Image 1 (cartoon, rainbow, N blue to C red):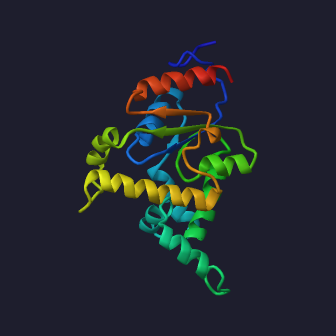
Image 2 (cartoon, helix red, strand yellow):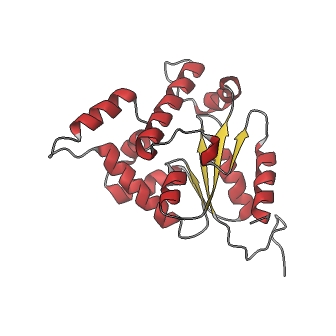
Length: 208
């Protein structure tokens, strides 16, 4: 039987792979590299478009509210949810993202962020869950490439985005982002290159 370029069975059915990450820890880069090696699709930016279609919200709203939640907004959201007539955009977008994750998980793929690891666990769907982290110094290079910091210094912006992302994750999963117990494997991408991460993940998949 012919083998694919990973040396793995071309007919192998891979599990869904989820990638949780700190801001600037190269989540998109790992997803793309894995997608190229395994021949399965990955969803990061495309996930926003799918969620927008599902929820009826604009892509900009999904981008802004689909992973980031401040402590003050969390409190306001919780308070307003007690009003019968209030419909939280954060909650609605999360529910739409949940549906998208479950639909995508019907076939092998790679999903970046969006609490996908928790959503799949709750649904009883097998997944290989990855968490990426690195020091702020190591993540500043990627943050500079993204150029999303506006008036913030890069280190302060990374701190801000990490806090928003962790608050969102805790709100909708009840778990702490980055707790190693919740993942199959964690990588420090400041010390372990993306190609090396890919090689290690492929070794894990070979054992499946």
